Image (cartoon, rainbow, N blue to C red; front, side, top):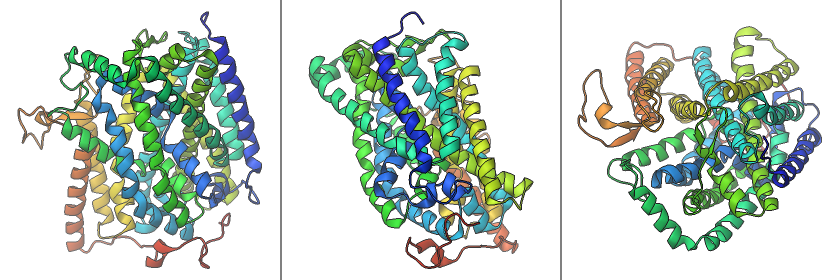
Length: 547
């Protein structure tokens, strides 16, 4: 703690205080009649226009962890880290139509969460419960990873203690976040997202123009990076993909794209939009963030050329590769601009963390608390329960950082991506058809989750010596179908989530065929075909803020 970078720390603190004030003021911004309703507290009144939605959804999907982890992956493994670029390009065409249908049916029926939709579509509290639990479990480590990004910045500024004092600024930041989220709900991150994105764009544009000119140009940067990867023994590292990791790259990009808008916080951003035209504009405009992400990823190679070495985490005694980008900024920029850059990353943690905690709290309130504990809960009681749950979720995320090795939190997020992908049949496919039987969906979920976890458990990580849950890339040689190894001897890798989803769908179809042959009841569908095409000016829409 004796090596504090005071200029950076002061600028970081000032900008953090600015967004704190905005967070508390947000409760009066575009305010409805009351915040004691999930429509208002959890979805911002369902009336955000194109610009607000663009910043909100962008701030939701492009997180602090993205800004530190993608370049860190490029720094460590090379081209494999670029999977984030095609993933964020193909995601928007893929989700455009399902997002429109989800908005429409939710606006007509008053749904707040994806599990609400599943409950109404299949009349199955059990299936809705599974979707809700999956969403909460997958979101928790995602929130914790925002703290990993924030801590990387704090560590670079000299706050790198091995005891509780090293975590104190983090605790203060998240107490403040918890308070203004409790008061203002979704309006707080929506308003702060403006500041966050402006800072991020400023920093990345300056970095991508200034740093290469200072370090010998892009040709030199790529030459130095190639020399580093050529000298590494890992066969999957390099400036180019190879025959072993191309399939993993493609399936990870596709699987991640399919999973992204299944996350509760992504759905929350969509449902907070005013109408279908807002969503359409956003699906067209959001790829601008992909351009930003592509430029940002290249900073991993810039850090290699700048001979950046990751800081040691004083709490674990191990190098923290997430400090690569903060250290690059600290070493190459003037102190005042490095402070702005650190604030951009730090604020970039607060926006998605707030949205994620609200989304998880909505799931708890609507699909567990109200369904199983207090069926006749009033809107005010629901809102109160969601506010309290959002505090618990944030506390849980902080405990992840305090009690668990941050590297393990990263591994948990990989698990979370595999888990949330298994909700695709019940949520995305069900937006188009009820052909899949609810018992088939439950059976598919069980197989997808179970087999996905088994495969993840068997993946080691030679870099840190872990024997289990060491990543999400599975060698086809290790793929076992009830003891049969169809690809024995193959070193080609594939994304575990993609394999688990295929198994999920196969089982769902088989059980559906059996259930239909047996004429098993498939629940009552509360939705109507026209519900999936409703728009903001339709006369039959449910009033916002009414139970």
